[in-house]
Image (cartoon, rainbow, N blue to C red; front, side, top):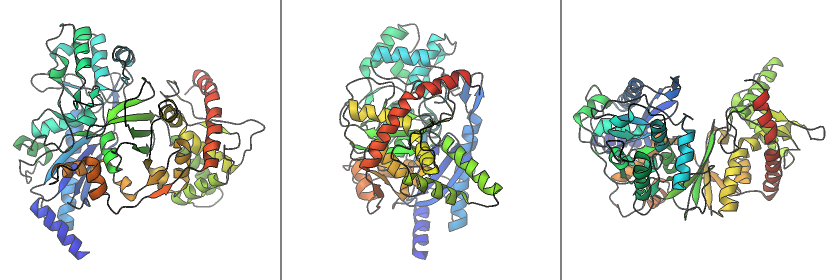
Length: 536
């Protein structure tokens, strides 16, 4: 243990480290790793978006405060654990939630408050662009925000000098370079896999059919330059040092890798960048990302097409609702236990209740629920109402109740994944799952394996998160064997010797989920009526 401690201390002193900083929707996290990809120290800052003038946003002051706080906490931890001050770092990478809209003028001033991915104010623009490009443009993409601003005749549009994402903005602040990683770029505008750049035909189409010479800029001229993983995308400037580390102990000149989106860092953190692999992230919402072997044959509003950090196409199925209703029900059972005089630890409650689902009828006994706290794009609902429904013939017991709520957590995701597997015949060799739902062994994996009809694994490193994934990308930039592809680097170096627990789909569970999902689809009309008649 002492040898390991001294090794980490020497790595810090020699600058043989990599730093990843990720701006999530509720937390900013910084992680410092060594050359063995082990976490040396971390820091974080909690923040929340807020609704201002009809838009969900974060102010730039919070961005800077959060960046400095997360880094300062990390720096303080290093000083406390190792008695040394960080003065140099081998490489740095910035990541953030994808999409959104940050438009700047020629002086570098933000023209309108940052519009996050959460805003659903671009419906008209997204629909029209999807039809023009014959390529799905989700409402949260940057180009949808830009086009909606044009449709709304917003006065700031002619003055746009630069348009970027949150990660691209912070990278620009610290390095002065208008760069973006290809994964994050794919949430701004469609990417051409062959050129590893924005789709030129669509850029021309946007300029010719939408801008029509009415603005003093062309689209590509205001977008950041696209970089792929492993490329050098700038260095920490003296101005950047003052922003990141106001004490200025850190020295300028540290190389930066391309800034990436949280989808890309999630792929890296779960070793899911090779074709025919994927990952599923489970929390308040749930999304699955599958790395494609070839393009899809049709355009589907349920499926986003993005990129891995090394430029491979990814089909992303994102459902807005997952674990919130399940957690609410378990909270109710916890209240009941306390009312009966029993104090139950949350981990024990989850373990007992989840494992009851393994005793259930394969289809959940005819029960039905919808955990829709909000609207759900995949099933065409603009708002949601959590519901539990049963018939007199349903087998209403605790085991079926729990299986039903676990199944429904993946109901909308299942519909999107069926498009990929049954309509497009997308091949998937393995999926790695991460999220709190998998802290109870086996149960959650079995349910996901049944829904996806694919082996599902969980690894300890999946809990390291996107900031760790970003630090890995920063480390990859410094890798001496640049001939290694990112997927080989991850498998042979980062994840070598790390075994996961694999659950294969059980045929009985798969058949049961198929019965359940048909019931789920037929019952959507109940949810729609509830939205219309049950007040929030």
